[in-house]
Length: 61
Length: 231
Image (cartoon, rainbow over all chains, first blue to last red; front, top):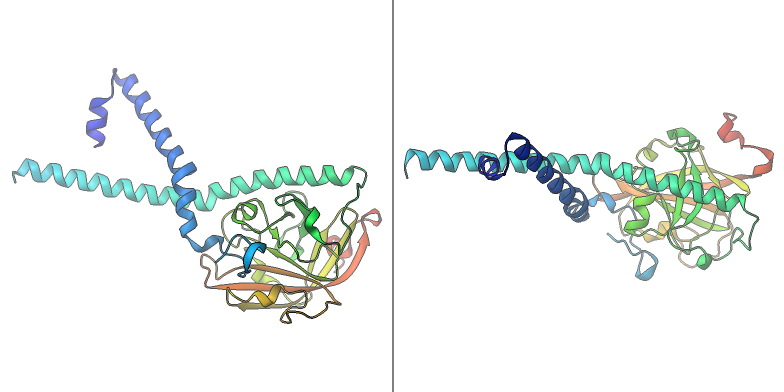
């Protein structure tokens, strides 16, 4: 996959490096701002409350 | 399958596994480091905001014991100082936000709506992250009976003293009652309760710290002894 990407990127060495950097940044941003915030909800680290019925505490356990 | 085919397949598999491994490591970086950066930024904003509010002439602000419908969710309620675990001074003492929703707790310890205000009769309940998002309550298991927990409000330092630590089930709502354990009892004491998850990196139980108001000191008289090293 990485080999294929490298061959597919346009331009000479500089173009390929730039494309790599751009793609890496985009993937990292996607992970940190979209994927991870969703995934972390599956982990128990946020469950710090005792379970409060109804509206008092939106977060629950 | 030819030798070349096998080689291509294995290479693809290897790259995929390495990539997945890196993603998992990045997730650790996110949880253990990135979330703290977010909380630090929010805490610093909340700190500026609350000090600004306090510096302004007291608008009809809620006084201790008043019902808190007036405090908007997500705004700063008070500042929490816990000398035993190094939670003292600007940047370390935590601004408590109103509300205990996921988003509120990402910004700092959260005050359960409808529980007492600082210094109020009843039970002021604050929950906070044990790990990730600044982990304000990471070390509250180190608190001992008699340790000070200081709540700074607009014009008063409320010094509470720890009375007990216990581990309860996640469903133990009785710990946040105005009189813990007694649903409809009329409160007389001024309590503070901290809740967080337990053990660290898990949430099978909750760690609860109860404290009782020991003294209230006007901020014009300087910091309370608990913060100046007196006790």
